[in-house]
Image (tube, rainbow, N blue to C red; front, side, top):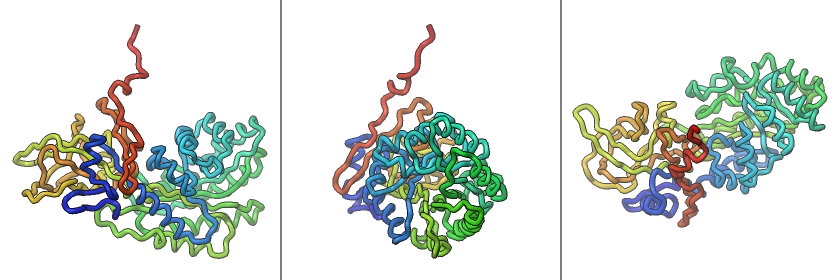
Length: 414
């Protein structure tokens, strides 16, 4: 995370001290580095070389408009899972012809809107969806471009909540049912077969499972071509992990190399759907220590960020590095870093050795993915502000919510 570094004793985002951001925008606050986002995307482009490819950013990782806009300007497509995400992509200047629509529960209204927008492809995840999409496309007088999301039943070696390519997964269709479903799609008049899709999970650190899944998908693609269903694209999903603590992380080129080797001599467009690996280490959550509670068994540092701002520790027991924004030479203690929400599960970190005083600032690192996107208003807490840093400049890309906004759509009983 070279875009977040100490200069003397102050932690900076690019050329801006985080203390200045806290003074100007308050806390809690999400802070992103434009340079880090750009470098991550360009890392994928460089690894793909001259291969015909489309990088579709997984919007669910972080759907803030400024981030979507930056990636669109860099040339990215988008992987969406809802009509709301499609609306965000369009509002951010994204090209609908570079959008793939995934997800197990697309509504008929969402399908209709996506067809009218002219998206690149639907990643179909059930026989029911195939029939609905054919019917809706027929009423609009168009053909719906489709690929089928196939579960290759490969163990991604990740947290069970973010493993998506096993037989037991709700996502996609089992490998053995994919060919019959493609035959069904070929017979439906308002569908146009464009490709094949798979995505085995998230926070993947070993390239081998991804290559194993790709090998199975390529074998199926060859069968489809032999049956008169040649594919225009091969979508191998996303899922590459990032370093949160001390994980051994391959470079993007190292992660993709075994899969790219399988594609030698093939003409199909390669599609990828990275999310976390583009935005995860490009952002942090800035928070302030409100209360220190020292006890016989535990020491608690109560900060102004909480599980509504960053859910991943409570949801996945995720580990996020905590750095003091201004280093001091005081004695360290072991702290539980917790928020003010009335839940025992409201924590950001366990057993952290830190030298803290009340009113100190902490940076919760690697918070760019699944942080703001998963935030909520639990305990009637306004969601945080978001700031983009560009060298020595800061841009407020999301205003902090006001309490009155939280119930503006509600009414009292007559």
